Image (cartoon, rainbow, N blue to C red; front, side, top):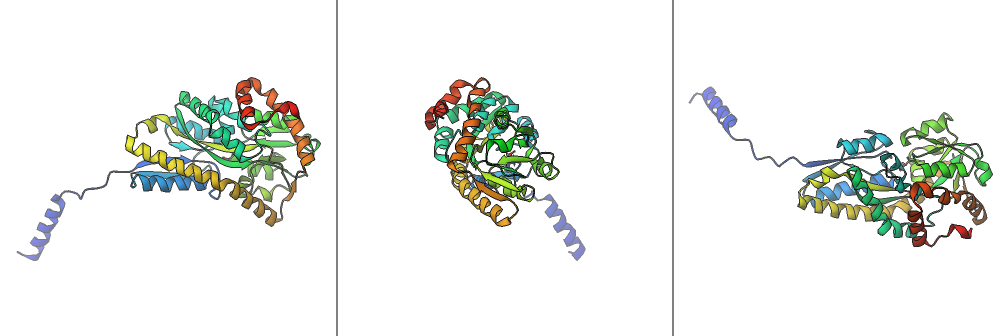
Length: 336
Ligand code: LMR
């Protein structure tokens, strides 16, 4: 056979041959969030991504979209409900606009003294009951992930409640946080997380509150002269998925994902405190923000003023829910 004929014949044979068997396309889970990559939330999300791939033999691909690169706070919840993304981990302060305002109970100041008390709630009946409320919104709550206790910051020292008078302070979209800031005589301003740095830089607001891991990774130390280690409130997350998406997954895949989520949750809740301690050290080293730690007397003075929100918010959140948490932690606001 002439060489050119041989080439044509081989070419024809190749074209006629069936395509080599291709592995089925993986199931993609888009996981969107608003914080930086060097944070407890993103590190836990990476852990989940890796374990999900490992336990499903790469049949599931979790794609992470940090830093509000896909959606800001409010948009991401809408995107989840529409199925544009499948997984989120919004802070518990952000479920009010979804109509599940009970999650704002976690925003009550001085509700928890430490992670142990908090875990008794998130890992107990109260925590489960709250996640169950999401199903009516076509959302499934899979887990609670910690960030940590919040610190206050501004361009002036914040040591007594009087220091807050008249300050404009950025808050997340929670009525409880609004009441908390008003109890201090400050003016709360709701802003998406992605806009906080600029709002501080341009003095649209004077200060804010957040765990130090968020403060440092958003470079807020560049635009806030003072931070007070007050641990006055908690900020954590609920990992949520679009329920219809989750329900249609093959059972074998879903159970492996549940296993990956349980492990990622243990990881998240182990690293959170350490990550915040590290961030505090980095803020200190930056020399840009002066850090003050409240004395027990100063903290008590804050607590006396701010704890009135526990009563004031009963109508919004439910007296029973607040009492149930007080019972678990042993806190009695009347003893202050
Ligand atoms: C905030 O908006 O301050 C936080 O909820 C951001 C986050 O997700 O940690």
